[in-house]
Length: 289
Length: 289
Image (tube, rainbow over all chains, first blue to last red; front, side):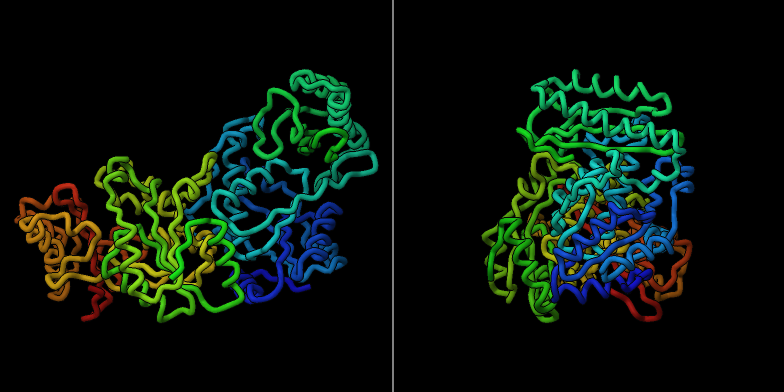
C-alpha cells in the first residue's frame, strides 16, 4: 500500500497507469468504516489498480464549525485500509488542493440540490464543493471506475450530473448501503451517539421501511407515504427530522406518483450528528435497501 | 484525416490512444486561417497523434446576435485541414455538447477577466463559456498537449487557470501570433473588412509597436505607454478602440511598472468586426511579437 500526498506525484503515477490496466477509485472524507471498506474491496476485485483518497473537502461545508468538527483519524484510516488490498491511498493536503489564487469552481446549476439542506440557501455551496473536488480528484487519479455507497444519494446525483455534463470518461459504480444489524446505515459519526440516541436512530431506517410497506401495499401517492414516514419519526423525540423526500433516484426531483426508480430519502439530526439514508424501489418486489 | 462528430466515438477513440503515443490538440471555433494551420502543424510535428476540433461554442457569447453572426464554413475548414497531416478532426454538435438538462458550468471567479469586455458585466459569461468548453473538450480528447495562438491572451489566461485549478494533466503550448505582412494579426473575420477599413486596421499593431518603442527607450510607466497607444489609434476614425491594457502576461492583472513578463493588449472594433492583439516584453531586447 503506497501513500501519496503530493499532487505532482499523483499526476505522474496516474499517467503511468494509462498504458496499463483499469483503475478503480474510492474517494472518501476519511474516518472510514465497513461501508468504505466494502467499496475499496470492490475496486480491488473489479479493477487492476485500486486507489482510495482521504480528503476532508473544506469548500463543501456550509459552516466552518461543521468543517472543524468533522472527525478525522488518519492513522486509524490507514490501519483499516492496510487490511484491504488497496494499491494507493491518496491523501492530498488542503493547501495544495486549494492553493493561493485558486479561483475555478465547478458549478451545478440545476435545482434538485435544494433538497440537501433545510436551510435552503446554503445547499449550492455543498453542490459546488462536491462537484469541484470530484472533478479535481478525477483529473488527478484518472480512474476508469469510481465507487460510491448508495447512502449519500445527493452526492451521487451531483457526481453523475458532473460526469455527464463535463464528459468525464469514468464509470460510476454505486454499491448498496452497508447497515448495522438493526438497519442503521453505517456512518463516520454513528459512534458519537449516546446509547439512548443510538437506539432512537433506528427509527430512520424503520421509517424508510414503513414507506416501503405502503408501496408494497400498492399505495402510489407520495404525500401519503411521506406522512406515514414523518409520523413514525416524530415518535422519537431525540430525533430531529430535516426532511423526508419521495423523488426520482437519478435527478432527485419530486415525483407525482410512485414509479419504479423512485427513491425514498430521509435526513435528520440527533444532537449535532447528521444522518441521511434512502431506499429505492425498482418495481415489483425489487428494492435497493 | 478522420472526422468525428459523435461524442461517444470521440471518447472511445481517445481512450484507445491512452496506451499509445502523445496526443496534441488544437481547439478552434472554425473559419480557419494560417494561424490555426500553424498550430495544427506544430501538434503534428511534436506529438504522435494530432487532433483539431471545430466548435462554435454558444455559451461563451454574450449576445445571441454575435453567435448567429459568427462565421462558419465547415467544408472550407476541412479542405484547409486536409492539407495538413492532422489525424482527427472533431466536430461535435451543439445539441450533444449541451443536451437538454445540461446544468454544470466551470466558473472562473477571479477578476482579471473583466478586461474582456468594455461592457464589463458580460465578461463572466465569456470566461465561464471558455472554461466550460475547454474542460469538456479536454475530457473528450484527453490530450497531452493543447496548442493556442498568443493572440487570444484572454482565452489563454482562462485556460491556464482552469488547467491549474482543476488539476487537468495537459500541457499548454502557446505559439506566436501569425501576422499579415503589414503586421495585422490573422483573424477569422479580417476578410469582412472593406479596403479602407483593412488599411485602417494596421494601426492596431502599430500602436503595440509604439508601446514597444517606449519600453525600448526605457519608459516604465504604464499610463504613459497606454496614452501613446491610444493617441495613435484615435488617428484612425473608423477604428473604435475598446481598450488598451498594460498587464501581467499570465494573470492579466494591471501592473504598476513595466517589468519582464508585461503584456501590452489592444482591443477594438471596426464596423461589427472585433479585433484583439497583444505583444509581450520578456526583458532586454526579447519581445514576443
